[in-house]
Image 1 (cartoon, rainbow, N blue to C red):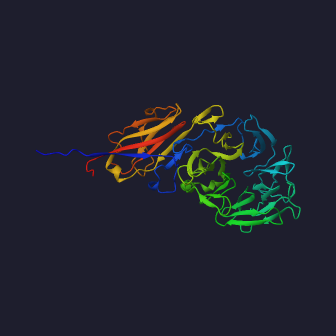
Image 2 (cartoon, one colour):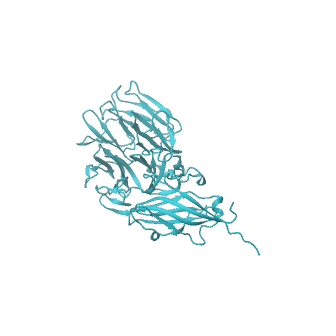
Image 3 (tube, helix red, strand yellow):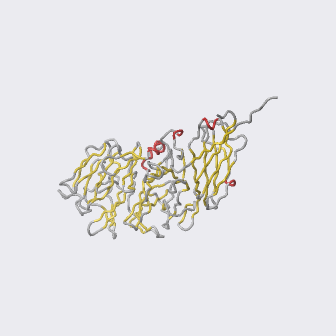
Length: 486
């Protein structure tokens, strides 16, 4: 009589986390356990939990009805826009715009620069393309630069009672007389500096850490000194530049900007490349439309709106610049939206969308809906894809069950899909939103694959997607292996 051995089996548990954001730099198979290959409208603010980003709340100012050529601020109260040919301003809690002038000849994306003397505050609107002179407002009246030496470009900044501008030749840095916004002529006080080592035309200018910073496509320069007697233009780099006029921001007291090779940070000395995990996103930028790129910041987040494989700004690279959220490198997440400008005002980041509405980009509301400040109207669509799971272990096993720990608003939705094809971006639905209970406290849900799903496969990958505010704090895969177990 034959004696049969009992079939041997072994249970194994795989835990998958998500809190370290996207990594498009490393090979997908080499990602850390809690990194993602892709996500949209998610954040790691509650690390190690991943959740829907904060709501964007639309402010009460009416939509702008014409082409937006620029957005800026005056102090901590006013938001300024160049709306077609109209220069107007309002406050974020206001319900109407105040027109300053309707006679601006818009032809280039405009810079708004605040310039203070000891007695007067000016707001400069730099929009020239080389023909017309730029304009400024002293709080009472709009005037136009009349000095023939005033630079006619849209690249302006201010520092220590002087205004600095790039001439339309894109290689000459001009500066006004000290404390005199209209004087660009007085010898020994006003003047110019030829950027002799500029590696291409100047693309951007700002003031950071008490110095004017000038970039070309492929170089970076910093102006030291307090006036013509001791000015020194230092060439910081001959290979790192800024891709366009608004592709920089200051965040956490550091200067961040976008070069063709990646995102760089500067605190003095030499710039350093950071956010390597975003490299795959940067490689997908449609550089024909690089002039659309915009950068901004709020708190410890730097935002880069980019045309990702598109002719419009359809994605935002969000960098958590504070290191230490479970890792020594910056966390990268991705958001959507077609933003044509950012401005900081009253410790908030406001973005103006191509539809003319202005939103608080990172409000304190977490309801999973974008819209007005009182009630949201558009549910946030979100998604995330886990790293590939591939190992000899799963080839000899079948997925017995899956546990998901989640919470969120009661009107949120969530689906779970899987793929076993390493070349596929299509996911088979494993659980519909009706398979989950949506409550505002953490709940664990057990899911069972069918008899033909997730068995003896060399590769598996999962996708969560849904709408509204959702938190996912745990994802556990239980495997069972049969026969031949040592």
